[in-house]
Length: 62
Image (tube, rainbow, N blue to C red; front, side, top):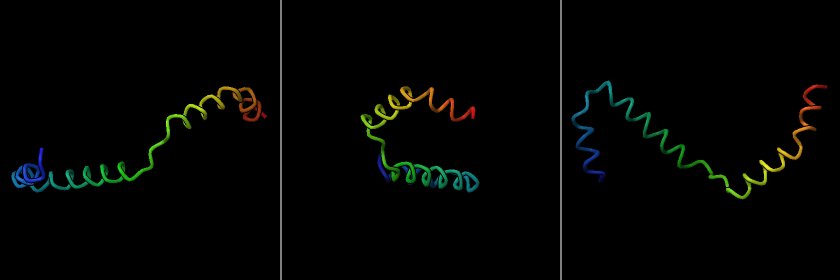
């Protein structure tokens, strides 16, 4: 889909729906701007969390 097609569709939308479209577009921009987590780093974090699960449980219970 091209930008022109999107603009054509927007022209046909009722005004109340335009606010929802704007909100959706802004959400997409914010999501794209967020840094992506490196899968290797995430896996290392999860492994560390599993290894230290008992320690975290004891701390939470104290």
